[in-house]
Length: 557
Image (spheres, rainbow, N blue to C red):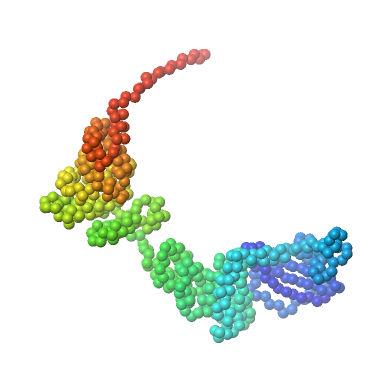
């Protein structure tokens, strides 16, 4: 009996955890054959298998036949006698195979029983035609076409002495002949596995790879003395993937090249991904210099206040108006307090102390008083008049940050006490002063929405000091308004008046009634608040007298 052995590597399923070695034994004799397929997981763990001679005695043959019989029953292989091979198409059909007299040429096909191995092969064939698999194969082939181990003669190398197979988690695998000396010199991992086995051909398989392409590119890098030059032009995400594989294979030159690339290349918005990957390194400790562009320790509050103060002050004194508006938007976004936006829309949001903002606020207020004083003590000076609007706009911006951070209560009290400023304001032409009244409107909107909570004395003082100025400037405010809509101002003013005692509501609303009749559309329309006050003051709702019902029950003693 002649024995022929054929070894083939295969896998069970799409996501194998270990390679499986399938031994095919064909027993020839007496015009019969039995095909057996046995699975050995123990042999799959060996890196290389060497056979000098194999001997079978009669007991081994008997045992093999028993195993074949068992596997036939379990469906792993087919029985030759139960399911003979299909006839070739060239063979003429027999008369007994005709299905009907009307169709004498159609033959009856004998159903073929597929084995488990054949079904797995068909499944792998179907998977190989998937578009995603085809793209992977194209990329892998592109990498292999320029790999030094594919063209060893061009690099002064001999034939590869290590059969290396890389298998992905999706079952895709690629095999190549690489050079043991290169792997051992570059990688501590391969040195530990192959260092003591020189002079023989080795077979190594790396299973469960996340990305076969990245592993191939890492192997190609091992053939270069300066891997960094091969990385030029790659994305940060690709370098991070290479770094992860280099770390797993203990490829020190590759790790150093990846870190050098990351230290020099821009990261754009990938800082968190870079930091996460660098913190996972196991075999290299020089990654800290890559993180020097990031803050290794949280900044102190004093340093943050100093930087924020310099930014805000720089915007307040900017000479170019367009640049000032752009930087106002930028700084406002950076200092935004909302926690939800700080984690999504504004991932770099910072916080600045209340003291730092109020220091800037007092400076702006002082500058505004000086500008108004100078404007009223001299003839009309267009330069001074323009500066009033600029300083008022700066103060409005700072107040908006106070409201955003919910720390504006002190400023409402401060603004309500600016009687001197209100008097100076009335002496300046409305075309230059109306931006000062925008601050009052801004506070009324915040208080009316409930975003700022202050005592009734503060609310009443705010209206007593600034309401007449707001009436006078409202026409210009609504014409020049880009952020304060007329309806918002009217709603905020109505709400703040209705929060006061009824007697104060009457005083403010009666004053408004006369002013509205005089100025019409250039006065805020708060008649809705007027109606509510009227109902509260004069419309008496009928009060139902309470009816007391008493029920008396006698309980037996």
